[in-house]
Length: 123
Image 1 (cartoon, rainbow, N blue to C red):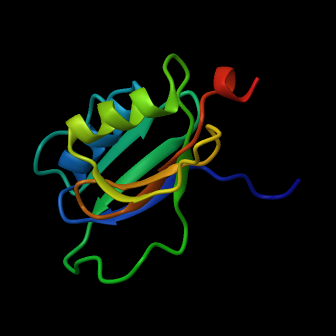
Image 2: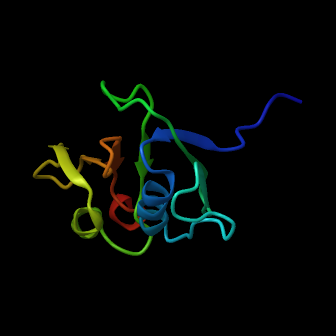
Image 3: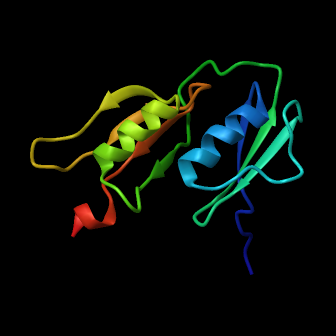
């Protein structure tokens, strides 16, 4: 058997704070053993397990890998508005007049991610 991805790890300035943001994005929670000030925070959701690790250096360049999220109970546009209200920042808007496309956002520490159309919008 080959290896399995156990979790996707993010280097960050504040593991707990960024973990809380992503827990809200994913409708999950930060692991019960993680607390403010801890060097790591784990967020397990239905689609992925994310690990946030506090490091001393800051993010300086564009992500080489990013997450694509797909809303499950709302439209892409509704999800973009919800995530902006949570503290995400608009990076670029690739929505097209015909309804196709995606929106690139950044989390509170500048990690880019994309919001795609929901499954219902793809049908």
